[in-house]
Each structure stands twice: as structure tokens, then as C-alpha cells.
Length: 384
Image (cartoon, rainbow, N blue to C red; front, side, top):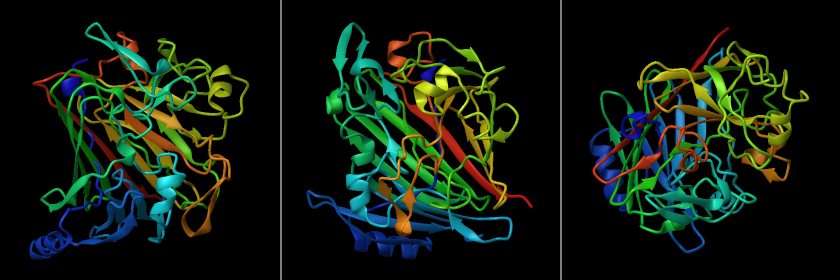
């Protein structure tokens, strides 16, 4: 697969602009319904700003320029009641100290790289091992912990924020100065769109994703085991006990990983199956069925009590389904809610884990002169 043509992710997020007074006045002049306010400071004294975006139906996204984090996402249920459907914190301190990537932009390489090493063009590169023997989600200070520049916008598609960040050559062990732009767009079709774009001056692996933890009944209300999930995937990538892909593309048919027709997340999650034992539940990449590189439906989630539906469309070849197995009750989130095991699920659109070490997987290598484009859409609705 041509990596240059395989990526495009659209999200809507709230953005940050360095000069607040200029940002507020320019937004007001252009009629942008985007509220900007302080969300605190990092431990080294950098200001973090919170952006709130609302569409014509009252759907609201709140995001900060620290990690591009989606702090909250309020969508209607079958009766029109708005609830926040993503896990997170009320204050910045939680994201600085305790967050398992709640709502963040993940990079330079989302997911795992085996043994924190890869070889590119004959040279071996070493990364921080921050997940057992492996590298995870960009390292010790990945994109989720960066301060991003931000600029609000409004166009014929919707309203949102453009986040930009330059990852310097050698940052977290990765080669090349990588310029990244992630556009978050909220539409009046109740879509949250993530558009990713990146360029580099040296060949480098890139795998960008968004890491919101969803509970369509409302964050902190309970587990997601009754959420009904459909994954448009005939195959998944089995892993070893450290959650690194073996290289096999295994058929889901006849396994607890068959979500081709909707079924409750908890229906088979505790089955006696080695892959479930390795992940403590689901924490696996699914190979999206597709005939072209265009947007493809990857997943659909339905929560029967609220009637909320979330559809996930993407240009990416894979989606990581994570069933919140490592939430253990030690994190207290918004409104004092304690986040227990399986209180949320993630659907992270992506290239496959450990692709730099698996030449048989779709390539994640971006080279000078190429531009990475990727889009993912989370579309919300409700059914009676």
C-alpha cells in the first residue's frame, strides 16, 4: 500500500492560539462560535488553553492544546438529552499526571514497536521502552504531551481548530524533522472529523491516531459490556504475550473476534481464547475490509439504553479495538467518577502495530517529498 495515499483523518477539536487577545478578537470578527479560556499551566509554566466548539444541534466538543486532547464530547441520546461520552479530567493536573492517553493525539508512532527498535534504510534506531519491553504511543514524551499551536476556523464543512506541531529530528529517537498538522472539524451532521497531514526531511515511520475513550451511555456511568459493536473486518492481527503482532492476519470467523455482525462487547470477552488472555480482553488491531483507499466504514457502536450510535469511517487500513482492560479504579476522572475496568472502549484508526518491523504490513514510512494524508470521522446519531 502506498503510505502517502493511505492516510487521512478528520476530527473536530478546539484549538489554541499563542496570542489570546488576538485570537479572541479575530474569531469574534469572523463570527466563530468558539470559546477560548485558560485550562492552567504545565509544570514548566506553559499556558494551556481550552477551546469549546458547538454545532447547530448543540453538540459540543471541548479540547485543549496540550496533546490536542478532547476533554469532553457532548452528544444527544434518543430523547435529545446531551451527555459527555468521553473519559477525562476536569483539570489539567489529571492529564499531566495520570492519563492513559485520554482523548489525545498519539504519535509519532501510535501503538507498539517491538523491543523499542526498528531498522530503516540500513540504520537501527532505538526508542524508549515504556510498555514492558516495547515502545508505545510515541515514547516517554509523545505527541500527547506536546503543546500544539492552534488556530480556529470556520468553512463550508464546519467549525474547528487546526493544531500544528514540529517534532524535531531525534525526538524520542525518531529520525527527521516531522511537521504535523491535525485538523479537528465539527459538522452540523454531528461528525467529529480528524484530518492528519505530515511532511518530513528524513525518512521516518509515522502512525498518527486519536485516543478518546468512549462510553456512549455517558462517561463514568458503568462498563461498556452491553455496547453493541460491529467491526468491518474479516481479519485481525494476533499478538504475542507482549501485544506485538506475530505477522499473521487471522480470520475472525469462528473466534471471539468476529464482530462482522453486531454483538455485545461483553458477549465473549471472557472466553477461553489465548488472544483474549494476552490482552486481558480486546486490545487488537482489526484489518478493515476495503476495496479502495477512500473513506470506509470501520466500526459501528450502539448503546441500547441511550440509543446513541457512533460510526467510525477512515482511510486507514486498521482499527485498534481496546476494551478498557487496564482501567482499574485507580483513576478518578470528571465529576469525581472512578474509572473502573472496561468503563470505556477505544477505536483507534491506524496502520498496524509494529509495522516498521513487518515489511509484509502496509508501510508507515514517510519520505522527504511525500505528504501524509489521513482522515477519520466519528459520526454520532441516536435510534429509538
